[in-house]
Image (cartoon, rainbow over all chains, first blue to last red; front, side):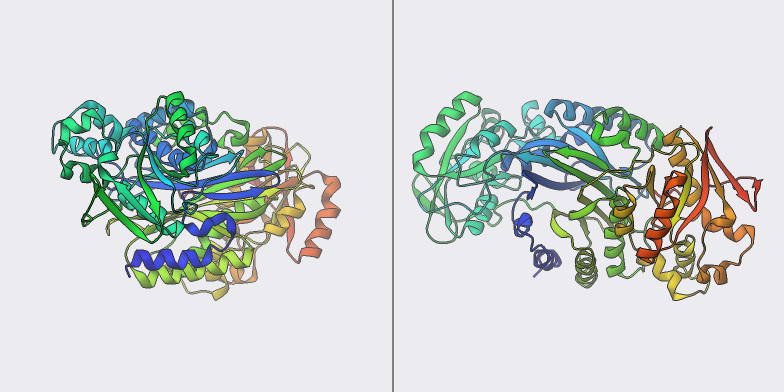
Length: 315
Length: 315
């Protein structure tokens, strides 16, 4: 057991309130009066979740977007945020961050409600926390509702953001669209809201499709079978990485996609495809749920060996 | 203008939602459905808000307590928390922190709802964020309601925690009770809940009575006059620091007290004193509100020069 898994086990032991969902979900779901509140908190750290030379406005956008992605997976409507801001006494950086924050708040119609500023020593990496509060007007999907026979679906394309990270780190040249997917993720809010009544389980993909599908399967007590050749890739990604099995496995184990991974009974497939058309957002079947546990990956119908890392755990 | 005041001004420009109270209050007050939610977030940083060698369980207690103190000042009832935890891969430290966290959550009847863990490089100070969500069933006091003629009141005693900090830093010897006031602050939740219908303005004292009274006066557009000789000091503090004007000014400008500072019309004085008896908690009149602006300090009826620092701003 690592120090982290020990800590998480200890915290789960404390989180006995049903609203905490055992700390196994993307967000807390708290009934207050007649309302269903959805609450999430993500902290992003320089050098871990963003790069030292990422534009400050993009860092602010990402801070908002990664939290919104958790709310999207619950089908909820965001209301407002509380922010924890680490001051490094760099007025130009702060001003650019606030401009990006303003843009994100306006884009998603959410309010800045409060927070805290703390001064860090110059040796410490910048670090920003955001708590997002939203409300749900209907069912709130969890990770644990997948049932044998369900299909596994994915919104959008994956792999782009990780390719963008490699471009940002000057490891490779590549399309601006990939860099943008890394720096300015688009949380799938409307899709999440409209999918919530149709799905049996839903989560956002932040650490890799295979790792997150395994988490969903574990939470549901089932087995996830992913059809690698069905995982959708963008033209920009295919140009960047090619179309062989290695490129596909790389996309399915890359982080920072912030797409929605969800399961639904066969009978919902037609509605989901109609919703895809209505939203102009690809919603693709990428596998199926079986009895059992863990995850399997198939390529053109044939089961293949799992890669050594199913995803990217950047805590 | 410092980088920090520039940043705060920019953030206030964004925080136009009435729930944000212009970022000038201890907490956000958000109406959702028929409920009044009170939300606050405080981050504490090693070397700034706690010491490297403070016991980890006490750090956890303080993290919860400083957030509860904000909720107390709103007269609200706490429901649950989301925590941001910086991992430094020190399992013994983590376990002791979680034990202290469990103690605090049980003591105040609040639920751990969610949060995030992030890994920090070993060179970075530990840093913990907590978002606390509560509900208010009656009026929610702000800082801005003080009116000329109101009396200024303070719960408990001040100066103890700062004396405790000096003991913790081995600068001085002193009573264990002072050290405990520094490490294990007691948020005045019940007092805040029962005072809320009686007060015209209320806030918690975290940065010094004089500085916080000035903030309350500024938010209310009035002048605060503090009677230094009425500011209550504990026996342990008097033994530690003496009873001259310097010792009293030191107590009135010290941080980390987490008492309640509030104003109320004269007509409420009898009710407040009865409440003090019922709670077994000193509630003392320490001054009065006048027309004008800023703050004045009197000692035995005579106005004295303001100290160079009115409080302790530890961001």
